[in-house]
Image (cartoon, rainbow, N blue to C red; front, side, top):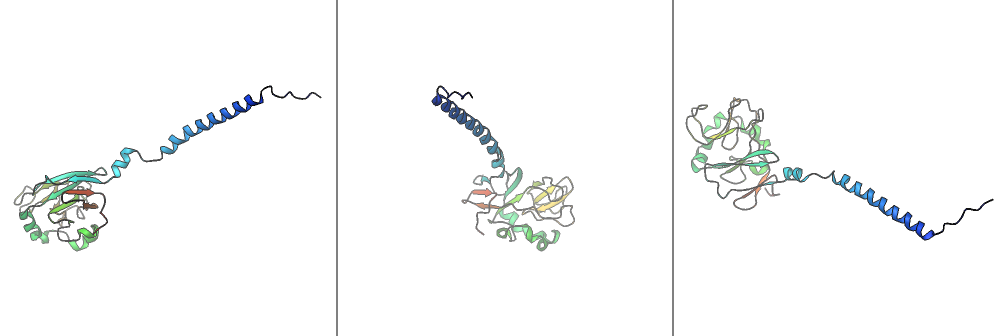
Amino acid sequence: MVQPKAPSNPGRRKFLINATSVVGAGAVAGAVVPFIGSWNPSAKAEAAGAPARADLSKLLPGEMMIVEWRGVPVYVVKHTQESMSVLNKNLSRLSDPDSLEDQQPDYARNELRSRKKGISVLTAVCTHLSCAPKFYPELGTTDFDTDWQGGFFCPCHGSKFDLVGRVYAGVPAPTNLPIPPHYFETEDILIIGEDGGAA
């Protein structure tokens, strides 16, 4: 019986086996790392879910700015003294505000639906068919209302909301404009998408 020959250089064989194992492990790691990394949200997805920051220092009374948060427009309105003084003169024309009270965060359960007096933060999506209501801050007679107290009108189907987003009675929209989570980081810096953890 013939005995197999011993390898002529056993050290070389061990080196080649070890080197091949290391290269193979590196190739597996090179394939696994991007695969697992693909499970993480992209920078665009993270930005889309991140809070939005708005500087209100240049927003004048009677003006509105639009801030995008999660791909949705958010209206930020700075009220005038005049608009705030007439705000509750048309309560009889609004849908029952008590039945809609649970639609807003605790810190906005007040007559101005606001965390900060004089500033309204409203999701700019009509609660009827998700159109974007237009801002009409002027008081008086308009094409769509003979006693307009300022607010938002959706020309698509005629829904009306007052300046703090309360829905009028008898229009297609069933509920108030939603209030997104928000807080004021400073006097003029608004953060939309978080409630700041305080009431």
